[in-house]
Image (cartoon, rainbow, N blue to C red; front, side):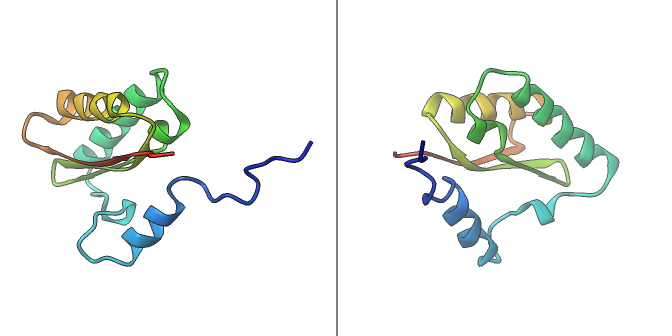
Length: 106
C-alpha cells in the first residue's frame, strides 16, 4: 500500500529552514553547555516524553541558555502548546520561558 503522505515533508521542515536562516531565532545550537542548562533541558524533555502527546510535541525544540528556556517547533493543538509551556515554567521558573511553539494548521 502506498503512503499518501510519502511526498509530504514533515510538519517542521519549513520551520527548521526558516529558523536556520535567521540570526534572531534560537536553535538547538544555542543550547547552553553548562550543567544547569543541560539539566534543565533534560528535565523538561523527560516530562514531555513521559506524557501522552503527539510526536511533534515530543520533538519540540527545548533550548536552555543562561537559565532561560525557549520552546520552538510545531505542536498538534493549543492544549499541547500550553502543556509544554507549563512544564517548562514548573522546571525553569516563572518569567524564564519563551514559548515560540506553533500549532499545526493541517
